Image (cartoon, rainbow, N blue to C red; front, top):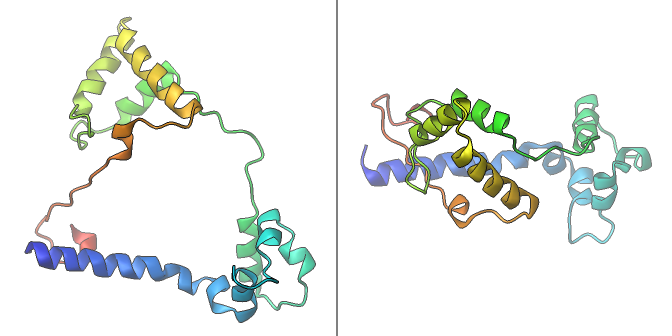
Length: 167
């Protein structure tokens, strides 16, 4: 597959994917589309976010599936999420990864991190704990490292056809 053909295939697939929201109840039901129209001064965005939309809008006819869909929008997290990474988390995550996983922007192959995990399991935790401290500081301050913000995934042709899902 040539580069232009590949790029066009990816673009077409992304266009279809981006339009999926047009098939949700909020896009197909006129009453619901008005409820989320940010230009409509009577929109119901705040009520939807607060989870009171269905309670206060009995006059909007919704199917059971649409009511369930809206109810799912208001489901929140009942407990705070623990974002602190431990040595156990670090080792457990990296041990599950395949060694042929793509390299990060730092140019360190996943195999390097697997060696760090082996060292940590053997008692030498200095490198792993240093990385964990960096990760936790970044998470707690909501300041991702610059290299974490630069990611590139290259899709290679596998010879299964020219469909984007077969690459």
